[in-house]
Length: 190
Image (cartoon, rainbow, N blue to C red; front, side, top):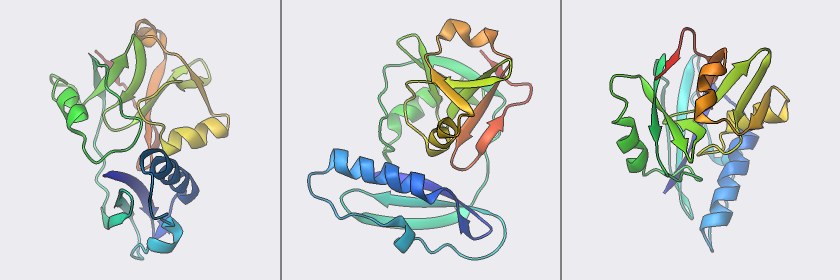
């Protein structure tokens, strides 16, 4: 099973087209026969104010849609962990990520390094600030929708980021569909 996490703000679905593109790509790549899912037709978020997390679970077919109030996880510190993990698709089974997350040793989250290159945290893509330019790993674990949107806009520049470079950056930010682009104030990577 796979899933999409979609941000709903004040009853409005955020960046639906990017979620639709990733869902389509995933179904086409993983299933020989599948029932296409039109997110615009099946999502009916409750009206009202506030931020909701919509979770769409699917495989060859739509399996479930749920809405719940969004509770952000506060992240100020990242523990570097090395792994050969693959997470090209947003699978519901996150056991491998959870095992890596368990190695955070007091940090708020992990920063996953694969073959000497920075990839992602357990919950978000990452970007680093050098001067006035934000850069993001060219080969993340998962190509997030917010990352894609910010690359398309020219705000983020994808490039290889070596683990040894981490200390040379001025700041870092986490990004995903729920948090958007969130610079981490006084963050540390250990």
